[in-house]
Length: 443
Image: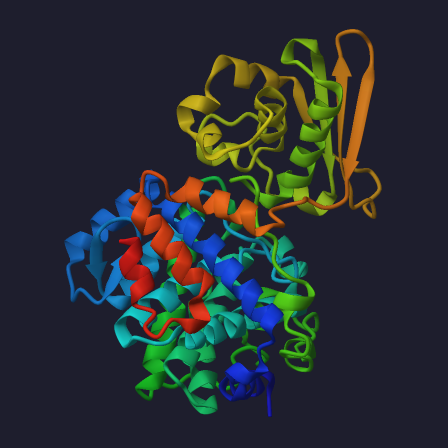
């Protein structure tokens, strides 16, 4: 039996009793964070354009578009909600996946959950299994896959979305194998589009494609049964011949769960995760020494070589570009003492004081490739030189911090009552008898 078939068998055979309380709790946190990012992203221009287009298409009102008061077909709801979830680059991170795990999964779970009235327990299982597929595939193909220029959130997310949809649709192992085969031919996403509206569109695309792959497989649609490992399969074409060890996908599937072992990082800042440790370092220096902008002569921020590939906008002119600018993110942290959603508006990015300090900030790479720290050095007008190093971004680590992020993202999109109701539904998701209650509270 090949890896594609074995993965189909593993996903099909996994039941809710395999989930530990800690995994369930972590999944609820991830869903809460994902809904928050989706709500905040619903107000972005990219989301408005995609929603407008989908409304022109029409179709049966089967699933809710979050924050827009609109319902559409299952695939298009997943498409729009996936784009929204990644529109601000405020969604979570899985290091083994090399991307953002929840954004491809959540739109599928919300759409199918609303249409088929699945339970919260079923939704949690679909999420955990989809996450596992994404992270285990990431272990097998990264970092070569990422360094070739693919966007793993979109490529690997297509398989995760198919797995999550397959669980909710109760596909058997053969049907899941075909769903993965269909997904393999639909996976795409180019890093060249980072810093544009098309990066979040990748996620809408993969959520829709994973969902449709499972729906087709449910109806008897077939695909190659060796789509991952075959000669012309995903591994050879998206990574390279003889590079991928696909045993990493199946030999420890769910033992332990990636969600519990390697976990997920919840973003404290709405920008590329490769900037976060450096931002933490800058904020620590600002707090420790009470730095004022006037006292700063220059800033240097150093990161790992494998992080700089996506930080491609040293002098950004738009909010989307600023999210992938190490220089802007560090400079704005020095200027504002925080990094919030408002700091990535086009007008804010173009403010003279932001542009001036960004111009004084240099993004650099450690000469030693084994150095995994992010390091910020501030040169002061009085001649002092201050340095701080951070190994890993702190991220959000408490439920109180996650609640604040959720409310901040939801404010202005949902009424206060709806914010409280949706939070409560997520926090007690394993007790929810009809998942449709959640998307309907987010419309």
